[in-house]
Amino acid sequence: MAFCFWLVIIFTLLYEPIKGYVDFKRFKVDVRENEGARLKFYKSSIIGLWIPTVFILLLVIFTELTLKDIGLSMPHINVITLGPWVTYAVIAVASFYLLVILYYSIGYQYSDKIRAQLDQAKQKEYANVSFSEVLPVSEKEKKLWNYVSLTAGITEEIIYRGFLIFALAYLFPTLSIWLVILLASLLFGLAHTYQGVTGVTRTTVVGVMFSVLYIGIGSILPLIIFHFLIDYVAKLGESLDNR
Picture 1 (tube, rainbow, N blue to C red):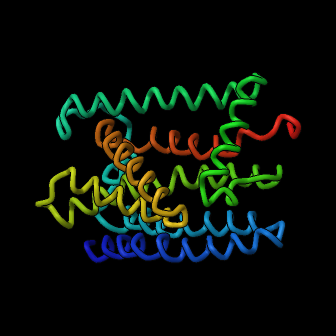
Picture 2: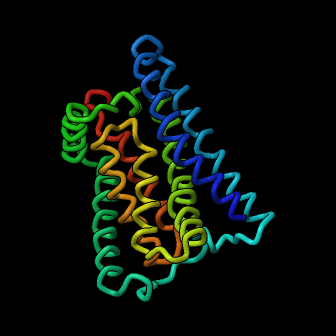
């Protein structure tokens, strides 16, 4: 089983950080001339994320690895591993952030004020990030983006939280849980090399928070929903004229 674990770890070290970066650079050129470039890129991203995920699920079927080992179990509060202060603090921060996301997601449907706020925030983000081209523009792209968001929520939580934390702890039993969290989160950050140094740093920090939250609640199921909503909100904030 250790060999299979290493295969997935090597995959996360090479595929997304390198191939993902190269594919995105190619996409940035293609999207200027080909209106179907985003749809093609989305489909490729979905397939690329499901390949290692299916492999992990096959390990569950054919080895002693279990669904519970990779976080696919019912949530329960665990304050023993990281301590009550860290556990409850991260749960509180995540809960607040989730409420903000839900507020804007729901409010976007009914409030002109919130739609205007999201539109302004999105325009500001476009001016400050190097990967804005990947976000959906047309209605067809936004529909497929829903599946991209759902895929990212399911697969990335299985790979980078559920599986990697277990695999790293299994392969390196002497490592502290914090070092395991940091390594898994760094691999998650490297999967976003196409976002530049700032993007890698930001997603690594998010990975640490999600990892702590996962250990604190003993399940990736709530994280899948949380992750999906974060990506889903990225398609909101369009101009009121295009509503």
